[in-house]
Length: 577
Image (cartoon, rainbow, N blue to C red; front, top):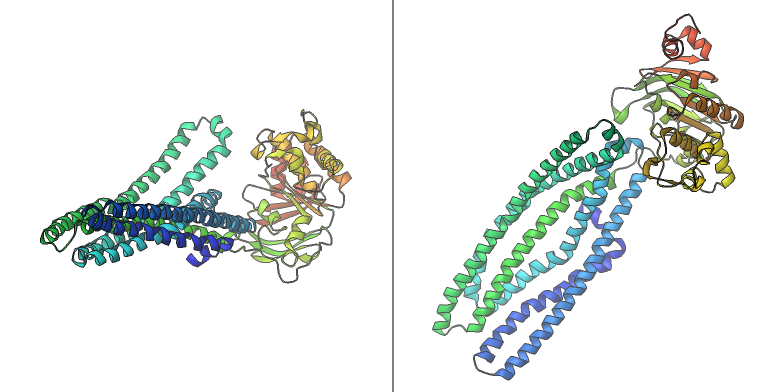
């Protein structure tokens, strides 16, 4: 995990090295200044040699300025290195997510990915900065201060060696105890982000059902659990502070009593004892700094694990060697296709055998849960089949280049969204080089131009995030227009006219028949009227094809189709067809 994270330091290796190098210089100055203080007291103040005091004072000031300079350079390089690491991690994670298949995305919730890209990366960034600065400064300070203490007086310095095991034991308890709390905290952050995201995306529904109080209680429940975990972690984190403080004062008192006796005996000077007090504080503060830094590292370790999970996730759908770079036509064949989500033994599609000619208009109907959407998502390889194979243009989709395949298959999903920007910029998602005339034609085919022309800014009208400033039917028509701009060989409409009126739905189908006759059109619909004029209609039930044919044929021979038709059109009159 550490090697994986460290590999993203990349171009910031120089800064990563310079930060601790400058820190060594700062620590050296911080340790030498108290040592000079002993000479200033012993050979200057006690002997009344003020010229010597001035000389040592100037030297100490110069060393203090030099130490400050070293510290500043260390801070600058550490900041550059840590933010650079964070930038590279976010870029790598986001790039990897873009290559995920639907199956990969199903393993991570969107809220979890957001937490990993933000909070978790921030934790690793802060910990990295602490490591290349504080994890260098604290151990060095402790070692240098101990060495100088023994140089001054080995007997008094030996007191430090007694307290170090106690501090190490306390630090171990904190480190090993805190990790489990931090891991649980980040999981709760995922739940918290999910609650916020879900609420904001569906705020209109929340208000329509007057569920604000319920949402507040749900948020508070997650938030309170997060608070409880934070409290438990904080109790462990603050444990070393009083213990180490007591040890610091204990050492100072012990040194004072023992050192005072040595001064009275004439075997030690006042300046040495004063300097030992300073080193005692430096040793204890260094230990506290190490503890706090290790806590930060432990916290970031939980975050690093979550980051590496995303970085190591390999897409389940990749190109084969030497993929076919051309889709010959819009024909589609399903051969003994079966499919299950996530390798589950339960097939949601089974024994699917279909043949669709290029340019055909095919309707797909079935009850909720009949796997209509799953069926069409196998065509552009949003998922891979579990059994059998799918052919597009006579070639197995696994042998086609994915970019080429998806460029030739336009799909308007049930929950297709618009992006913040203008209507024009949204249209160019279909073809970034589309001309104004091509955009206008696509919108006319999708029956979108008529309402776009009513806006003050026409195609320059701003679309809010998610398309919340247009109606559901308008959003669907714009999404259809965007798909048409790809000039696909196959167009899939997954219940994407459900929010438009029947007249507009009929006009869209009429335009398709006249203007794009060579494009294979698959229309998933709940309304029989949307598919009854199709070249063929596929009826699905519980993941199986239970009927294929034209409207009249299915009405006469397929019970499921007849029941759906009668319930929608004839109000249950079985005699009509």
